[in-house]
Image (tube, rainbow, N blue to C red; front, side):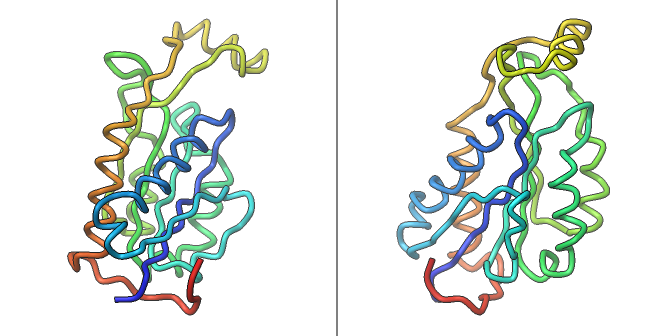
Length: 184
């Protein structure tokens, strides 16, 4: 098998989901399966309109606000659905904070995106809520909802998931349609 290329496409409002996507891309390449195969992964914002046809697999994620993915992630999913359905795809939603997680529900978009893209899986990843990064309206909502502040991201769990994805790609449990490009 030639060197697998994985796009980690993300939509982030205040940087937490971008940091998750960057760590996921790094962890995919550094996982045991990723190192063995020379897997290459890159995190790119959905706003930059990355072309999924240039990648063998895609992990697509978004920050969740008011129970929904950000518009650029939803638009990327819908606009690229044909290409995304032709390759292994995983989804992640970033947002719950605190212990127990708040909000406890799956994002409203999860079912529709799963039906549209037929992903290999969907993970809800804990996020970060930093009051200093919020605008006035967002601070008002956070205060009214009594949302817990802080960083709930679980880097060890993210690393473990990256290892599972890399193993699925390079050890044959998921067929990878190799794209037209060669190298990073």
